[in-house]
Length: 524
Image 1 (cartoon, rainbow, N blue to C red):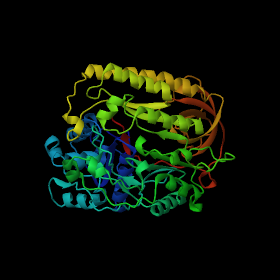
Image 2: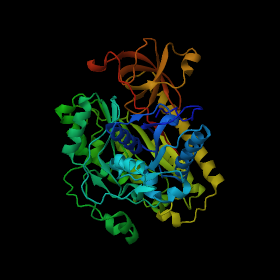
Image 3: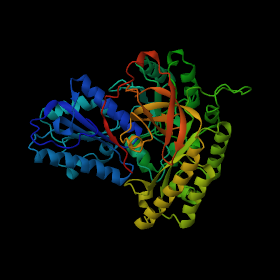
Image 4: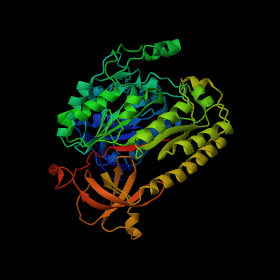
C-alpha cells in the first residue's frame, strides 16, 4: 500500500492473503473513504502490503467526475493484473469501488473481467463481508445500493494516527448542476448532527489530531432542509436518486464551526478546514466566521481555529454559461461574496474550480472567465476541460467545442492564473506565518541548488500556501506546527526559514508518523 509500490516484483513469490493495497483516485472524500476501508480491514486482522505485488487484496477507490478518471482507475487495475501475471504471481482478490463502483456497477465486469467485486459509496462498511463472500467462492459480487434511510450517522475511522484528519459531516448533493455526476454517485443530501460531529472530533483530538478538514459535497448545506429541491428536478432524477429527507433546519454550518470553536474538548484543535461549497449557500453568517480573531468592536468573534482559506467553486465567469450549467447564481453575486470576505480578512486564501469548453461556450464567454480571475485574484485554481458524463442533463447537449479549442483555453487559463499566483505569493515575502509540516519534500531541489541545508520539508499555511524549508536537526518534523519567515516565492510555492516550533509536548520527541501509506492520486 506504499504510494510508490506499484510495480510487480519478479520472483516475489506468493501473495499474502491477509494483506491489502488500496489505490485512491479523486477528492478528499475518497481519501477519507480509503482510510475507512483500511481501518475496517485492519480490524479484521489484515495488514497493508508494502507493495502491490505482495497484496492478496487489491482495491481501487475510483473517481467519476470526468471520463479520464474512470479510464485511469480501470487501466491502473489492468496494469496491476498484467504485471502480476507476468511475474507469475497468484491472482489476488480484486475490488473496485467508490464513485466508479456506484455509477458503473456490473458494467465494470465487462471492462475488467478479472475484477471480483464492485462496491459503492454507501456500502464501504460492508467491505469485510464482501471480501469474505468472494473468498468463499462467490463470483462478480456487487454491493452498490444507496442507503435510503434519511438519517446520517457515522464515526470517523482513521488508519494511522497523524496530525490531520478528514471528517465527513454530510454527504450527497441536491443541486444537480447539469454537468455533474456527483448526485448519482453520492446520493441526496444528509447531515450528521452537531453533537455527533463534536463527539467525533473530540475522540480524534484526544489521539493527537490538530487539523481537521470537514467534508461534504456541499458543506454549506449542512443541517439544512431544501423543500424546493424535489420540485426543481425532472421526475426521472427524483426516482433514481430518491426524495429529499426531512430536516428541521435548526442547525447550520456556521453554527457547527462556532460549536467546534467553543467546545472545551477541542481546545487543542488548531485548524479547521472544509470542502466543498456552493455559492448559493455561502451565507453572511459564514463570512463572519472568517473575521480575524479578537477584533475589537466586532459584533461576533471570528472562529479562532478556522483556517483563512476558502475553496468556492464558480465553474465559469460567464452568466450565460452558468445558466446552462444549472448553477443558479450570477457572477455579480459571487464576486460580491469574495469582495466582502477579502474586506473582512485580507489574508484569506481563495481558490476555485473552473470548467472550460462547456457546450456552447464562446471565446467571449471564456474571456469573461479570464476577467473573473483578474477581478477576484485567486491564490490558485483547479481547471478542467469539459467532459460529458452519461446520465447528466448536460450530456444531452451537443458537445460543440472542439478538443483543441478546449485544450487551448485550458492552457491560457492556467498560464493566466500562474501569473496572478506569483504576484500574490510574493506579497508574503518577509512575513512570519505558522505552517503545518506535511512531510519531507519528494524532490530535494533546494539542497541541490544550495538554497537549503539538511533535509527539505513541505508545509502548508493556514491560507493553503505550500511552503518549503530546510532543516539540519535530523528530527522528524511531520505533523509539527512551525513558525517560519517567508524568504522567496514562485507561482506554485514559497520558501522559508524556520523561526521556532511549538507543537504540543506529547509529540515533541518524534513528531507524528504518517504511516498509512494509502496511495492516492487526483485525476483531471
